[in-house]
Image 1 (spheres, rainbow, N blue to C red):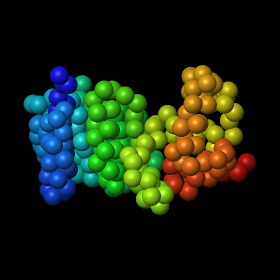
Image 2: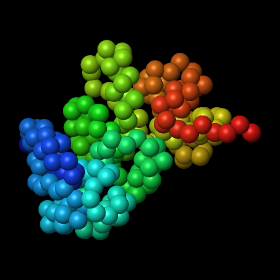
Image 3: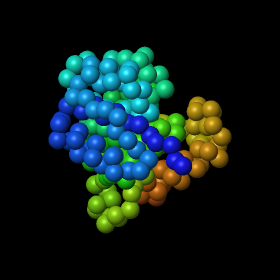
Image 4: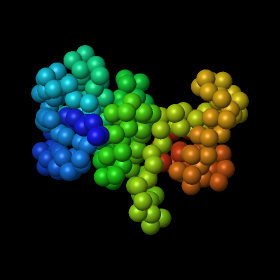
Length: 216
């Protein structure tokens, strides 16, 4: 029997929060144990309920999201936090990843992407980052299958390719093998629809996934 994944939803938009809870409760392996409209209430519930996963919006009444993340970690250390927001500032996303979030999804993400991210978060899998350009690209291509998101590690690889690092240099910088770098590149090429390293960097820059490096 599959273990149930308990979820706490923190979002100040009542209608969206309610709709999200309904979607989650339809899944046989997910159960919504609580919901809150502000950070303070959410932290109190997390301390009492110790959910497997917290879904948190970036902009909620009360303390800023970084403070809320730190408080959630204090009161429920084993809880994984998944950010779901309309913002896609990659600088903010990287700060949140560094604070230990399990993933970041734009609110344009499809139901299947959200459910997959929750299950990945609970399994302590690789951090998932999903921004709205991926949804736009899938619609333009007429692709109805769930799209995969770039992971935090893949974003690191893209950044280093943009700075003209070789596969060996990237491997040394990230502490991984060259074979792993090549695997990441294949995945990134497929996800971005890129045909070369330069094309990959251009597409990532246009999508605001990375900030272009200034010329020397």
